[in-house]
Image (cartoon, rainbow, N blue to C red; front, side, top):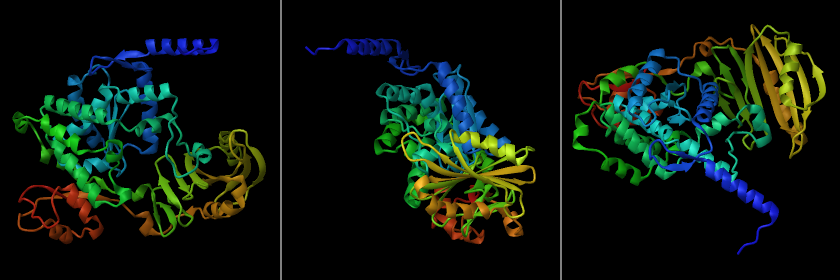
Length: 479
């Protein structure tokens, strides 16, 4: 018999009590499970996650498309295992191929995954799958297990741990986005997706076409373009087999609605949207806001609606750019901004202009709890009604190496004057009805589509480049 010391008995008793009260009935299985979070807490987490997602990616600015996706999702909610939970459906403005669910009924599809799909039934199956994760409280169960094991979550970034917190990336919302579900969770979500789609009168077998498109895209893409859906929802042959086993002959009589769906994609932005910023020849340009600045060679760029993060490839230095509309004078604005650095020691200040723009600068040494201090330069630049804030960061010991490079980028900030840059716009999907005599490759050639997009559009259309699309059946090209 193992002997416990007095202090250990307290810990064991508390632990046992915690386990006893931390159980809840799963809405799908009807069985008790370990659960440290109430539904109210789950919804609160979902609200926080939603704010983080909207900052990180932005909602795609097409009201009718968002309303369409919401309508399809809401049609399945009454038949879900949590019909009283308010669900939210939205389209994210990113070419990343992904769909995911945040706690509390927040469900997202990207415009990238919409471009990959070819029917309303596919969309319903994917939304149903994500609803399944919410119904079964998969993310909450994972978090409960991790809390029990005292395992901390870490958010990936192009910068180191100490620098990452200044980038606004180490928050609960983004952590919850990329939880990897277990194989059993994926099987269950697939099964629920089939059930919810079928009950809404959609052919659930279209989930298989979507799986095939994902696998084809992965095979045709370079490693950095592999669909993110596959990393958060791992694909296995068993998973596909299990989906096939759940389909019935009656499912073939249900709605697919291919043409109705494709018409919604006409004009959908394809790939990165240069209006939101792009890198070309070592310079970051933003046509909408009409500014540019140089990028250090070999550094990685993360561009989101919230900010631009430029990271040294080994995470030893970073440059952040944020913009805010304000009429506040630069001096008090910079002081308020500096409060976010914590217990920073001010080293020096300056007020020289950047290009033709009024600017204020301050240099700090910022202590870190478990590592050496950071060297930070904060620069605030006024351009019209906006103040642009650059935060340059590195370890204090490497400041002489990295800050000259960072300073060059900050000091290169200027207006964009090139009309070609200012007019740069995104490529968009277009729809055509083939005559049944030309191959997809010939149609792409005649439409002037750059060869670099051919393989992806082949996957998007679920047809080989040498194949002849069926006459009169809408296919996706670019314009």
